[in-house]
Length: 279
Image (cartoon, rainbow, N blue to C red; front, side):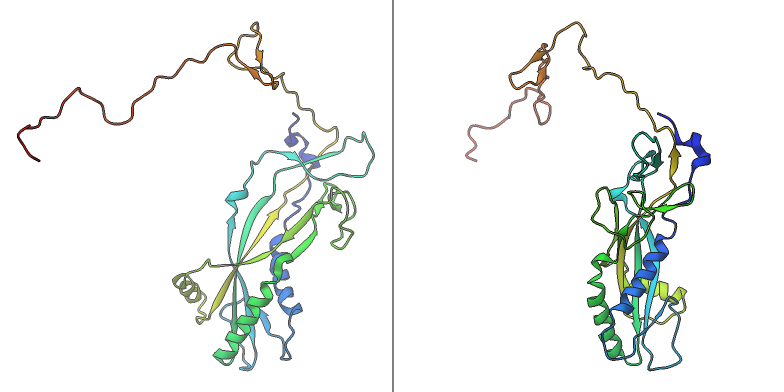
């Protein structure tokens, strides 16, 4: 198979280079868009040590404190065909390869600040209900950057997040938010101490994303040559038996395995006992 490293001049930029920042911005926008109280909306901050000058001002802290690889969905780093199908007609031979996306979990620290502790707790309850609705924090077609700089979706259209989604072969990108118990009280105290911030009640949320790397253009496509499948452990001159259901079976009778009796090794010993003993 042709190696994409040979076509380094056709290598494009990283397609998912901005997704981490976009998720953080989406969390902040989701909070403000859902504000339905009669009070003035809170101020969003990322600095944990920020204390408002106005005591009546409410503050919501959105702080990403950790990234972790999603080991349960990790793939091999081999090159594979990217899900990008350009509308260039049959026989064009334009094929794009990429490595599998990097699957990452983003962990966010959500806190609130208010003049009175009871007001902060009410705001924290509203935050939990609002973020519980973030099942589709980001839901849009996946964006791929071609080596020539064009931004397209998986079916070759010019990329736009609000284009029609009822298309065949259209790959979607979905990022949801889940409430998790990730930080202990001791860990949070150490974090607040490092930032010189006062201790506040907090929530931890996890967002799972996929970071797409560069695309490699293969003008002539690729050819994979595989040898003919043969049965292992059987002479090529011996015909294989076929069962009634069509399955193939070997003519040789399998050698029975030597059975090992479980338990300790026997030494042909008998128990010594006194026949006059009543017990």
